[in-house]
Image 1 (tube, rainbow, N blue to C red):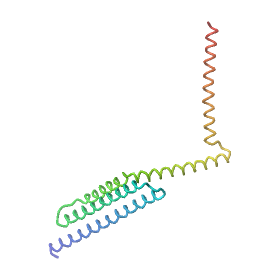
Image 2 (cartoon, rainbow, N blue to C red):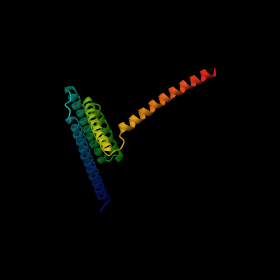
Image 3 (tube, one colour):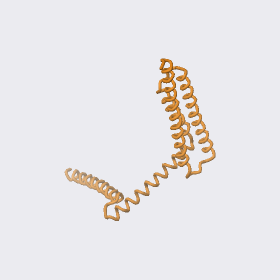
Length: 181
């Protein structure tokens, strides 16, 4: 096999590997984007956002989509550059996707719709936490153990006793001071 044929074979193999890597990267990023959008949609599903929030959310999603498409274009450009013999560092491909993902998420996460959805999610989580805490306290009380309320009550009584003791000590000190005079 001649050196030219060997170089062409190596070049072809390298281009095929790069194309495969780019294809896998695009597929993985599209899956990640789809998963993100799906989880975002699930978060807003329970609440009916205001029309303004919906419009802003759609605009944020469109901007995020543009970021992904720009990244895909950059990837194709750099792949073409590599195919034409330019020395392209593989970390450039990673950096393109990381940067675009960061920018895309900023566009979506910066919207009022996303904030409203997160607020609803946090509220729901807090309600669930309170319900779980109530169940735990009831279970503890049924087993005959002291509950948080019991401990808090004892603490409040101790603080009140200390306050009263301090008042009594001050009165005794005044009486003793008066008797010594």
